[in-house]
Amino acid sequence: MTRIGVVVFPGSNCDLDTLRGLELAGAEAVPLWHEQGSLEGSAAVVLPGGFAYGDYLRAGVIARFSPVMRAVSAFAAEGGLVLGICNGFQVIAEAGLVPGALLRNRGLRFLGRDVWISAEQLDTPFTSLVGDGRPLRMPIAHGEGCYFADDATLDQLERDGQVLFRYVHADGTPAGAEGDPANPNGSLRAIAGVRNARGNVAGLMPHPERASDRLLGSDDGLPILRSLVDAAARAEREPALAAVR
Amino acid sequence: MSSFRFAVNVAPKPGILDPQGRAVEGSLGHLGVSGVSAVRVGRRVELTVEAAGEEAARAVVERLARELFSNPLIEAFAVERLDP
Image (cartoon, rainbow over all chains, first blue to last red; front, side):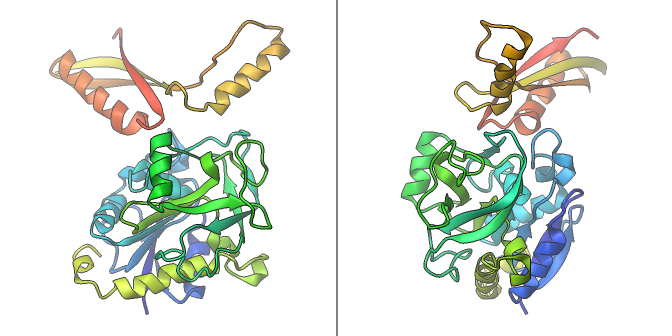
């Protein structure tokens, strides 16, 4: 069974949900404590939601310097698959593993509610089993989720297919900019998730693991986790990753 | 070795959306204050550094300001020497 590691920082609070979601998606999911330097042979790594190190200073920044993040960065540099969810997205953005930054929500409020997103790229390790780009319903729970990058970077992300998820209305029409409730935090160009240029590291603000079972009200997030497990199973056999797992 | 005390002032870069600054600005009417604009909210970190001289101490502070206290994509910082 393909092993996927879930990083646990002090203040992570979606780690158990993420471990459970990955198990539902068919993986052997293992927790990776922030002070350890080993990824324990994981074929992919997920950074879960929460408030790592209390979100002090800036969300994600202190977590970035933890021992486990050195291992995650080395793993990513060799092409290893890394997914950051919510606070995990903030951590990998602070670490420079994906472009952009997450600013305070435009409405200033912490938002905990369901949103709709749609996958823009359907042939990636994070979306290959999502299907046809139909709108996916899953929760957000964040105070700093307003995606920001300068215009040149945004143009380049769009051109190179690095925009992975965008906020949409329930019927799939694109969310607008500031003021459209379908774009909950006012993210530029309604961006909900991006990937790096190489395509092996991705982050998104919504929580697929909280929508991984019909009992939770939606299982729209499960195909995202399944895509990752599927891609990790193939990556497992790549020798270049052996040394950094 | 001597001790040197510094402050690092971090603020959103010009043009970067600052919802906190905007919220503060929006509240000024409730105080009966008018004529105030362009409010930006940042943060200030004060720290003491042990080093051989001020230049070496400042280099440490600059590095921390760049790598930890600020995110260069969205924030600018200024280092200030404080009296011991």
